[in-house]
Image (cartoon, rainbow, N blue to C red; front, side, top):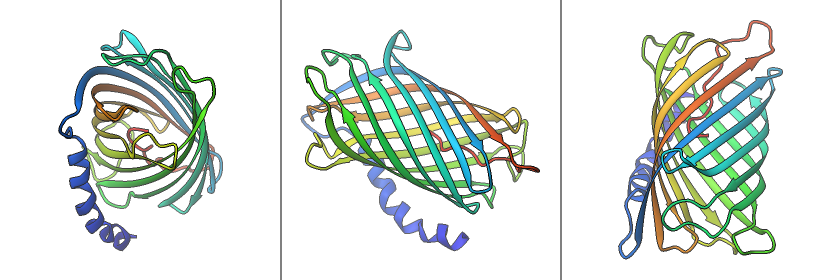
Length: 259
């Protein structure tokens, strides 16, 4: 398994400069700054050695938390192929509200499905995670009378570092960081580049069941018109639950940062 993650080194060396470049605004485009607050509640229920379920709710707020930005709901089932590999499939509903200087004329509901592959290494002190996700989305854009189908793919690289020991245990703080790029594809894609999310935070394992996280999320998002790029500075507060029904359950691996 260590060899697998060593093999990803050249890939990271190639993609990380692209992630950094994605945070910079192309010329002749309009930049918009927003200060947001994301409240996240997520939970994983481990049923057997092979199966787990996942649920998530996010309340995303704009204008320093004063106005609604998005509501996000996710439900998923995961199949575990050993300690390092995980396959997942789920359903999504979200509603995007008008916000910011270049706000849409009305809210935009969305529903869809997704499939993902998650590869993680928790053998060392620094825990490394790769997540690959494919999304099928139906969105009703403002002033449209029907839903439009779109495809999107996502790749996330996540890191977690326990602060008081070589392994993450209860009552231990930890550092967490991630970067995720989201790309549209298919004939209905308004733009190829959708957004990039760069995240860094501090977490605390209150118990085997409960984790708390607070962090900063820098989101670069390209609006559908292709001209306006949002620079969203977001405070993200998360309550994460891991419930394991197996006998003699080990300390659960961390949920992916950024969700």
